Image (cartoon, rainbow, N blue to C red; front, side, top):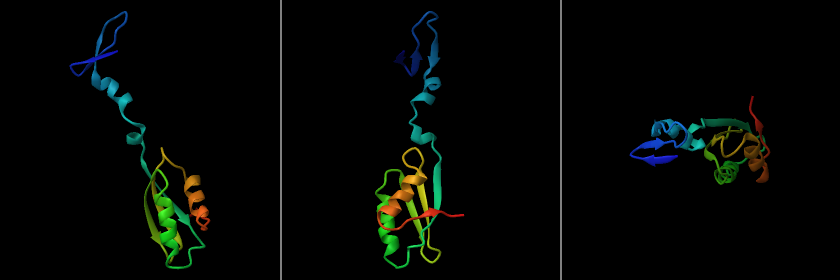
Length: 106
């Protein structure tokens, strides 16, 4: 394959030229194809005003987590994340690692 003048030339038996855009689909990083995800977690141990700060700091250090919204009175978190970089299980492990086990809200 040769790239020249915004076209890809596939060298082979037929010597056909294929527009670069046809190959562009394969050149786009997987993260652009990933849909942003959100996960709502119950965190029953979140009982003091500083608990959310501790949890939020831990989650935002995790690759793939893009945002955390805390609902302190409901003892609930909504975590925005890139599912190509992290998973729900990894997010829950992260909350547990700072002393706040969590579960997926129903």
